[in-house]
Length: 217
Image (cartoon, rainbow, N blue to C red; front, side, top):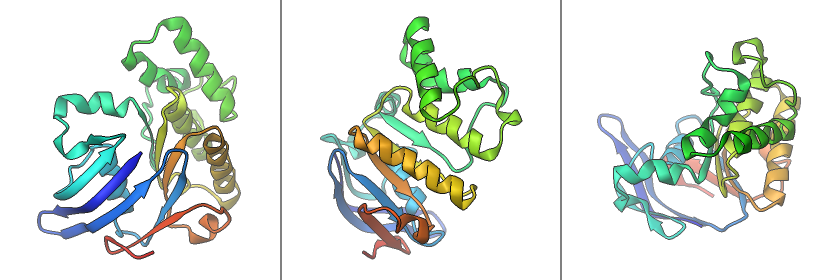
């Protein structure tokens, strides 16, 4: 599904965030990306979502060479990805329903299908009945669940989660990762960036460990 071949990313004035990174991800894997702050975890995910472009090397996603993908095709690529952020990235002037439904609206789904899928996604993350609430009235954990519902509502084959438990307490963090494991059990591929080694160690899944932008283990 995903292949990094000697990928490097350099930011002007700050050196290489990633250096000659090579690895592969098979469909249906759930993989943790670990490392210290600044190790390159977020950069790796941003390259997959084409929020950044690699400086050198090649990234293939489902056989598509992302290095050669024109900018106009990026929105279509992202429709096949679920993106989850540490800072939630919710629209605070819109209801929970509208936040979750946004990917479906962009993709051109009809109102009936949008309603059905949005309610199903909210139910999946334990937020049934929250449709009319607004993000600012929710706790941090509830806001993260809204972000997760938004990521899964279009049923993408690949989910990228950047420190999804970084702002949550240990109990809720474990609950969120258990939810991700449930998604994985039905065939969804997940790449999860996390600095929490203790939490990651509780799951028997493959780990890609980065150290100053290089593959350490």
